[in-house]
Amino acid sequence: MLDIKFIRENKDLIALGAKKKLIKFDVEELLAADTKRRELMQSMEAKKAEQNSYNEKITKAAPAERAEMIAKMKAVKEDFQKEEELLKEVMKKWQLLMLQVPNIPDVSVPEGDSDADNKEVKVWGEIPKFDFKPKDHITLMQDLDMVDLERGVKVAGFRGYFLKNDGVLLNFALWRFAMDHFLGKGGFVPLMTPSMVNRESFMGTGYLPQSEEDLYKTQDASYLTGTAEVPTMGYYMDEILEDKDLPIKFLAFSPCFRREAGSHGKDTRGILRVHEFYKFEQVVLCEASHEESVKHHEDLTKNSEEMLQKLGIPHHVVVNCGGDLGLGQVKKYDIESWVPSENKYRETHSSSYFHDFQTRRLNIRYRNAEGKMQFVHSLNNTAAATPRLLISLIENNQQADGSIKIPEALRPYMGKDFIRKS
Image (cartoon, rainbow, N blue to C red; front, side, top):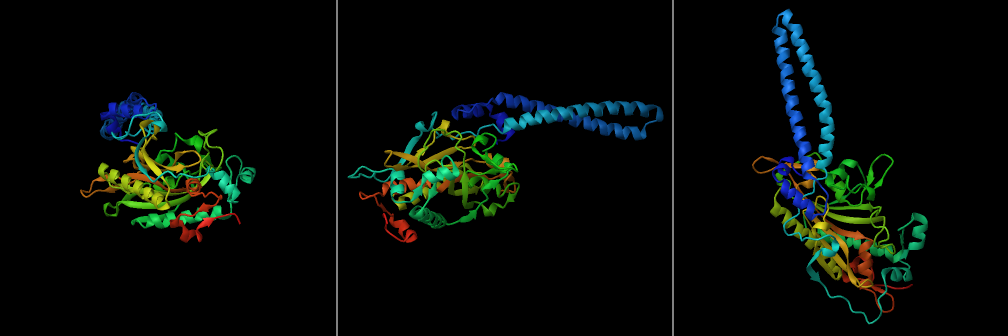
């Protein structure tokens, strides 16, 4: 959410931001609703003052004048009540429109309609050259009894899966490695979050009302979260932080659930796009400074790049174009890891900053050095998402005999160098 004063003073900038993000939003409709809201509030304030004035006069008035004054005060009160009811309707419209205002993308965000227009900014690692035809992760994992997709679908439905044997051990090895890697960067607080979260936290982070179709809703009107970002951002909702404690950095873990409502027919095989998965998320709250946000954005992205580099997974970093940004993001990087069987990079990490878009909605503030109250800035970045990350890890380390070489960084956690048929 943006400040209404800023929106009024920068309506052309808001319109350009919406156009760049390919988001349909009529800023003039919001401003008209805001004008009506302000007019009603001013009128009601004047009528309230008029009522108070009559109250004082009535106590001092002669009996003959008192009845006339009471009648006039009653008329003012009735008009006030009519405007009060009208304001409730205007406020509903105004609040709904305010939730739809897109954040303004950074000037460095490229133009574009979809992820096909994202721009490569960095490449790491050599694409592996196999002297045999590489297999996909499904074949490799099924041959090594690491996954059971057929029974996963039988038990959990479409996109269901079971990890088995070394599939489970490799997954846990990745989690333990990721925990040590990111906590080793210093300053991160490990956090295990709820995966069933109230509506307010989803509204605050910007996932509602826009993305409701992709969320699982419970019987008591809570939602299952698709990322630890949501509960972690809700952690300090309606609180005032201390300037000296910033930045606050979390390494948050949670089970995640997504309906993949907009992905019908996409990646239906394997473990790339599933309804239930697990994720570590880097979340940062920092002072209200664009420079600080940019600095942390680069640092968080670098943390994830270094993890992939330790695992030896070739990858590149792309800056997302306007059409591939969400409502609240100012700028976003995707890190995409190489998948040999598809001969292309696939997204494994995303890194975003929001300025105060989320924290205004969640009412997370701090007093700066001058004692002025401000909304903190927020950022988040995928630290490690499984089982998706297993795909690049397994396919890039496959051997001619069908075995999988364990990257050196994972061997202490895995307890062996290769996964082979028993």
